[in-house]
Image 1 (tube, rainbow, N blue to C red):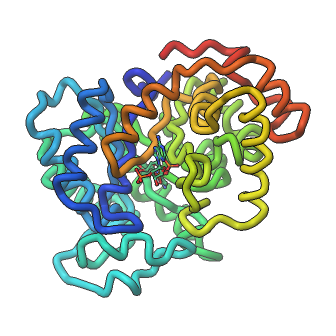
Image 2 (cartoon, rainbow, N blue to C red; image 1 turned 30 degrees about the vertical axis):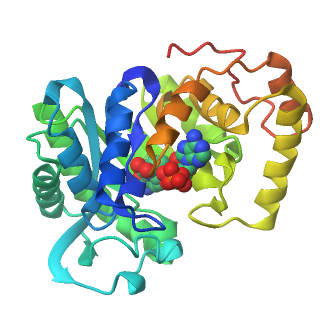
Length: 337
Ligand SMILES: NC(=O)c1ccc[n+]([C@@H]2O[C@H](COP(=O)([O-])OP(=O)(O)OC[C@H]3O[C@@H](n4cnc5c(N)ncnc54)[C@H](OP(=O)(O)O)[C@@H]3O)[C@@H](O)[C@H]2O)c1
């Protein structure tokens, strides 16, 4: 597979950018340390996460470790300026206010070749390293760009994708793709460029996977491209939280989770284990990157990915139409963890 995530579980650092709440520095650093101690060696960052804050914190926490011992991914498509802005009034499309507690630096979109190289330079500084392994083009999709998203996508294909293909071909990075919350741009990118895979968040989860299963994941499997599953808890709802898609969850999703939980209770399964293991079971999935802002979560997630789940549990979810009948489940596929 063209994307490789060590031990198939990494750490997503969006929460370290003070997503939803102001996280003290020591708690953020302790969370990365907990990930390292538990054996996690893939870290996903982005300039967006707290306007550079998550990358700064990750860079500080990883500085103690030799660079060849971990795999690092970040994103391009947004530049962080020295100029400040009101964090509450940032235009984050459907996800307004998400990083209200992050740094006040102004965030601007830039999907050009030149902007891509500038973004990488700035990320390397914040991350205190001289190289990145994977680079994802961040959010050229409807949830951030509304009706204009196709024009933005085209800009990203002729700008960022070109720059990243060149960096990959020169050996400066190991691979690139899109980092998005939507399936459609990934399908389009397969027609327009030669990505190594995709970081797709919230769209191959226990709660939401139909669209990705139709075309994208089979196409990736055939081409040996890797999918990194971001937001395997759909931003919290599948882990006991209240968020779906980074907003308060709609009632229909709350009801669906309640129905899944009834099946979980019958089989003595923790819904979090079912969520993580479901995402991991598809052969196109290179790995999952649950996000967390507390060290305790990391240890729990490591245990949850190997918690035993009876085959009958998955069959029950299928017969109750709670997951797609053709979705690969862990009892059918035995992923090497
Ligand atoms: N466009 C993109 O490229 C894109 C989009 C979205 C996400 N991503 C990536 O995917 C990563 C993961 O997504 P996410 O962090 O947004 O959502 P997520 O992994 O679906 O869920 C994170 C939430 O789950 C909670 N949680 C984690 N482990 C838990 C456990 N064992 N028990 C109870 N609660 C638990 C966390 O709570 P606490 O904070 O309280 O620990 C946090 O609120 C991001 O950090 C980012 O790296 C990429």
